[in-house]
Image 1 (tube, rainbow, N blue to C red):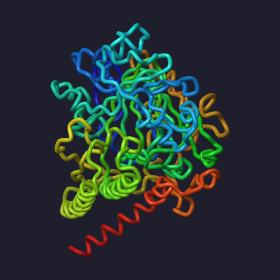
Image 2 (image 1 turned 180 degrees about the vertical axis):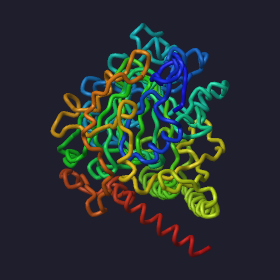
Image 3 (image 1 turned 120 degrees about the horizontal axis):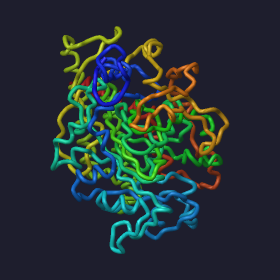
Image 4 (image 1 turned 30 degrees about the horizontal axis):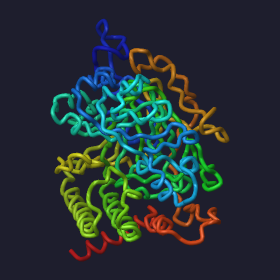
Length: 519
């Protein structure tokens, strides 16, 4: 076991005060590459300097640097604010002649529906604490009892471009990824109620460190994709959104959502949540101020996924731009700052296909670098990061990718769940999504010193969920039959079919086959 000083579990046999981490980096990586359900790691980051990066500390480190905050409403049934463009809401939801209040109750608060302010962390802290703000200040138009603020998707390499030494304070090498630190991580700072709409990430798996405050995670397995009513509008590369407001679902329009198996967990400071590939998640801050740091771990499967994303981008941009060339803000997420022209997207697609084919050649040539973990072959190969920093679209360094275990059911039998690794279990059926819903109980596992396990409250005797097959295309649920008032098939309806994951996967395979035959 790795030993460390500061906080954690006493080794029992070492010197006085000697503390240990429950998993070696090699074992932690083995767990991550094997798990097919979310789980919470405890006692793994007590010696990380980034563990002390609360909002006040970050404010000092940033020295007055401004960052962008996304502004949203806490209670959508009580607020009608002029700063939030009602016309955009009506356009996106396609339900003209209704008020903002009705629209927001019906759909998630997508990023295209929010307004944005640039502010320092000092200004954010003053506003979030309810203190009086300057009349001319960035938050002056937002009552903090009605609005939340979220600095999300902030790449640490960009945030600390003038102080890169602090990037070493994030030590993902403890989880078996040597050299991975803050440079491959993103920062999330939010106020009470700040949330990320329910979505799945097309690339990689996810490790999330909670630094300050608590966040509640609602997660759904990949096999429930049909019940989440996936959409690519708003479009963002690598993010597939759900049409459902999962904390206040409209079951009249989305009745199949009742079949989705919700998993819930509240993440406390000092804990690290593992989110497996293609798990849906909605995340909400439940304390006045929250700070999180995450890193998306590249996987072997991402190579084909990038081809599929390039196809999706080309189709979405072509149809939506043709529908209304002057209003990309209605369907293109603010994180997508690159051009949407057909020429650019065509280059992107050809580049993704070429990279996929080149990677296959390299992988075949690197058989000598294969290594085994529990009998499973793994190959290290270069892969780009999940997302590009929207502020600094520079050429990235290449990162290693990791192959998921193929016989995961067998490996999961040996996962050491317990005090230091807590499975996120399914919630009980027929319970409210907001009140009374069962969740993995990690409250009480955390000491005041920050995320260290003291007792285990979750029922470990409950079975670990195995990965189920993704429904066939014929079983994909469409909400079009429930919208009796819709007199025609819209562009978005057509896109829902064209960019369905099953359809896109087939198109990608055909393109790759065609390209291979032409070589």
